[in-house]
Image 1: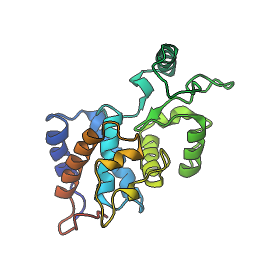
Image 2: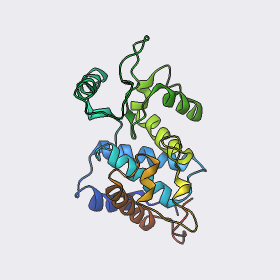
Image 3: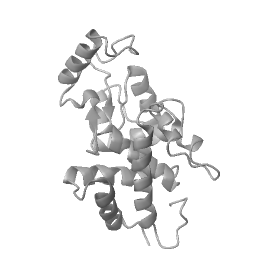
Length: 215
């Protein structure tokens, strides 16, 4: 028996979306689930749950790719970031990476998880085979964004930490896994989302499927 998507959506609709799921939310989640099913390197249901939880948090539960600051356009995002930088509200930023380069491209954050800086777009281009250097705005395509978040969290591309550091046969660390993306920021909140997604995945698994792994 295959993964019961209808049951999965019924479960997360209640546990994570206050009883309502929009078409865009369903489409975004479905795209990530499709990405899981097309790969052989993300078999653990905890990995899948934590990826979904990360997308949930980073997109404000829209489950659609977003720009940094949640702006509707690059120009607006750049303006917001410039304003924050000018007021000293981005102390960790030494170079305003969001400003357009000589080719007119901005390397601001985009996706289901924020991919920032040209070097990271280059790295993800190598890993996914999708030419994000030619068109960084492709990270706003749902399918591309799903590939980025899945590959990046498996390979440790964002911070050097990866899913296999926190979810193994001997370890399940829902809170510590936040280091894959952003240190300890909102770690408990994301852990709560992940546990809810994992419960839905487990409930919807094929009959007889072990709880840890999901083919």
